[in-house]
Image 1 (cartoon, one colour):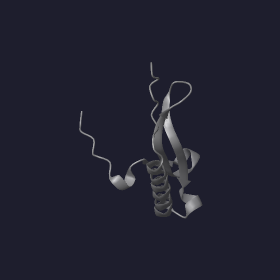
Image 2 (cartoon, one colour; image 1 turned 135 degrees about the horizontal axis):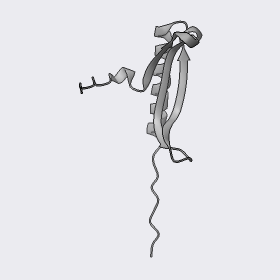
Image 3 (cartoon, one colour; image 1 turned 120 degrees about the vertical axis):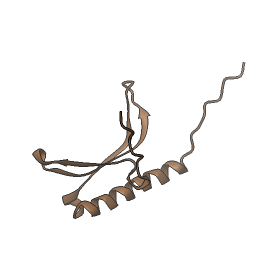
Image 4 (tube, rainbow, N blue to C red; image 1 turned 90 degrees about the horizontal axis):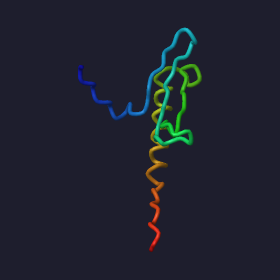
Length: 88
């Protein structure tokens, strides 16, 4: 099996979607993973940035990167809390 190329930092969490059959073209962003109530695992934040909505492929990519950076910045501010063990 060939090795995968590492993801470039500026593209982390972003996926390009070009599906001609449904005329869907844009960037799909997923950030922050968590367990769902139905015991499955999925992304916490998702967004789609369509080329037509944002004025082209490059503009949509820039908006998607800005959205991702805002989510990451917000996540850094939030600290995880740990449950204290009950004293016996």
